[in-house]
Length: 140
Image (cartoon, rainbow, N blue to C red):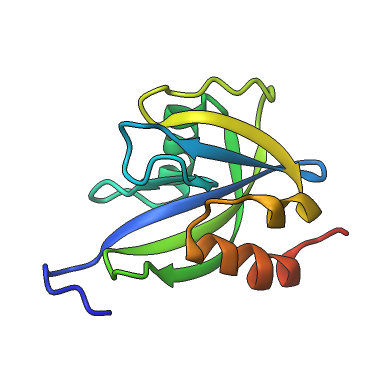
């Protein structure tokens, strides 16, 4: 599980909440791992804070203005390519999702209990939403 290519890269995961729903995106055909469903994700640029990366990636991928509320978790991807910084986010503007077609094939807002029904999902995401997120949620 060690990265023999050098230093791990850092990326964010934006868990975007609107009321009792969470935004999920399906990766586009030209993206890595097409067809996988996840929260909005993206690499951090040199010198960029995690919060700024969250705001930037949400705007770039789905056209949403978000407010990073708090960091929920940190993990290393299965193949040790990335350190993922998981952030709870709320909308800071309209809920009008405008996906970037080069990165997002589809999107859906799901209630927490519906997440388990997602078929194709990264193991980190499945672990997060099964074990970490329930312990950090503010509401039922």
